[in-house]
Image 1 (cartoon, rainbow, N blue to C red):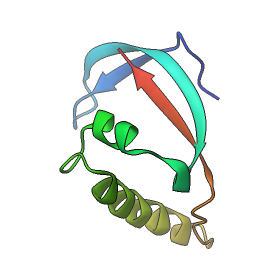
Image 2: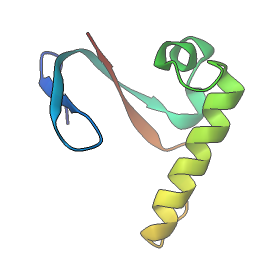
Image 3: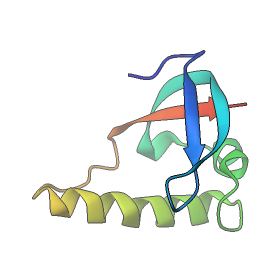
Image 4: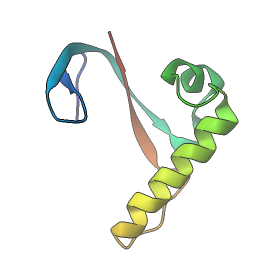
Length: 83
């Protein structure tokens, strides 16, 4: 489980290190309780909660299918915020 204060290396598509970031918070939240503020803060797609929900549900469904499992919308996510 990641912890506040952990340092992460951000790489480019080639695997070359490009930045060092620090986790400023780590929280747990069920998928179906993600709010609009978090979706906007993540900065993907159009920044809306519906976009976030649809894109991430599709991602988790694909990943779980590979493992022979089904995605549960009540599954707990680890939310990492970094600076």
